[in-house]
Amino acid sequence: MTRALVFTRTAGYRHESLPAAVAAVSAFPGVRVVPSEDPVALHDLSRFDVVMFLSTTGDVLDRRGRSSLRSFVTGGGGFVGVHSAAGTELSDPWYGELLGARFAGHPDGVQQATLFDPDGVPWKFTDEWYGFTEVRDDLEILLTVDEETYEPGPYAMTGPHPQAWRRPVEAGRSWYTALGHTNEAWADPAFLDHVRGGIAYAARG
Image 1 (cartoon, rainbow, N blue to C red):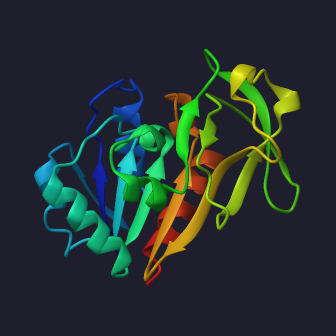
Image 2 (image 1 turned 30 degrees about the horizontal axis):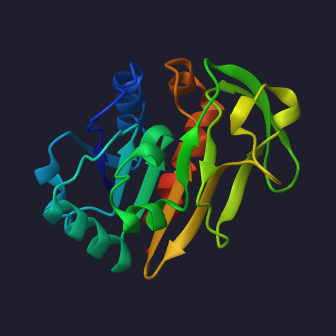
């Protein structure tokens, strides 16, 4: 059984899909979810295998929580970031390293676009399409979005445009997906499989 703290605190924009997202993750077989919006929940992570930042926004941790999260991951724990987790803890340089990139912005509204996995298998999906800065060069890219299939506006990226990736962080693991803006995403079997796979990767000790 994977023990997961699902952290949903927001200090900025709050996604209306959060209740559907928490319900969907809580229904994953083999995952015992503890949802929280209290920064104190991160002070002691010893009973968890994975910490998920689920559509969090802004600076959501206190000093002790930042230190605890860093010790947890570097000591062997798993981190999963979903959607606006990329726009979280912008004042903490280490969090940016943990996540692997920083949120730059997205065009207005949701659009259908085509994603590709590393084998070139296409996947049509409707979401907000994030652009990123400070992208680390050690990421294992899991999904890219084809900019020819939607309107990226000022958030086009040079080269492959990543939307999901993973990487080891010392003894731990970090996995991130930019998908998950809409309620519909959290009822989509392919997307739910995607997130389940992220939790499984992060939990692998």
